[in-house]
Length: 155
Length: 103
Length: 265
Image (cartoon, rainbow over all chains, first blue to last red; front, top):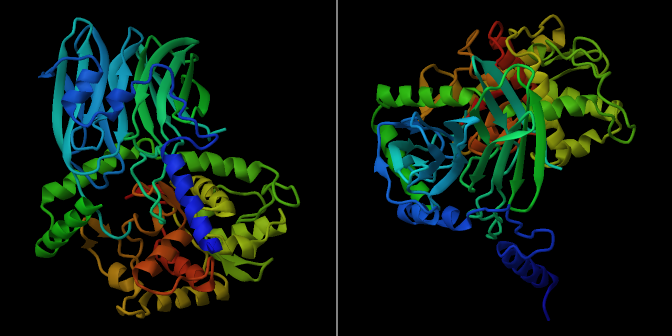
């Protein structure tokens, strides 16, 4: 006979499994329209670029990545991507050593500057990339190494 | 409904700098809880913004954007008195919309 | 997980061996400056303001009549004068204790139940918002805790004793970490809390948004975690000893500028 504890534990396990698969009621994985899951699941830079339909990136002084040299906590790392190039259609932020490398994709049009700042999670010290995709197929990037430390016990 | 965003939009010259703080867990789906169960992924996937009703920003995010996300962008041609509206949609289909006036 | 643990071992070893190079300290200062604009604590401030003004609880009342020490409903400037003595309860109270009093008397909540609720759950979440907003309403003002009442002075002395009291399996006291200047644990600077007006980032920074957990921590939660780190038993929520420590640190911070709610690791 199963004890109540065993029964509950079993239910929790099943629930956990269903949750992981997004199958619990009310947890439908409603993807926003046009969400590029393949790109956001990619584990390497080349895979992410391929999923975005972009070629191999070329380093460029016209793309700027702003970020700290060292982040006290990898949970919140301020990162900015900008470029002065004309004809840019998209800006990307990628963290090379994250389990999924692509953090964010920003569409660029006439109404907004190709200049975005946000904060990302970094699992460990890593190269961070800002990539600009132009209308004529160019893929240009800037890279910076951001160190991630552990802090102390408080503060 | 999710908690409200904090939006600040400041005009300077021929553009406005918009800064947003969104209230969201941004759970990656990589973490496990105390019982060893994976905490399901829950994160904003899409962010859009309009200036006086016209779309100026569309963005897609992955779960590695930080919790309680911060976003800053510059809208061209915006001036004091214009309206900025921002929306997000997450992987569960939850949404949030907020507006602010450019100062 | 494994990566983080081995990183910790590496860093612990490095920290014991030498001071961080100046560039590391500068790097961290630069990182903190980058985060200063857009503190997620603002999200909690907004929640707190709404909670203060909304009719809630069994009595369906707002907190508009709550007296935080400067008169019913006066929020601006109240934070920098807490903890202080209150005539209606006949005791010295800090912000969280005073919120419990108001939430019980005005709104009909069960204060003991809230005190027993774990941090981050139920009405403890409401308190997160409330302390963030109330602190923000005093941002830029200077700490000026009253010591006119005999109980306020007695509580200061009690707080001082508690601060230096060594206990627990490691014989720690608050003073072990916060009793001298220029100390750090790994890369966290430890504010010295015994001098006046202090360095302005100790008592003056709490409540604070902690980026490591993405949570808003009240002073009560900060003290609770300090006790945990010292391997002490957990203090009671808003208990006399925690209020006393608040008086000790707050009076020591007299004249310091309130920066709460601040951003912490």
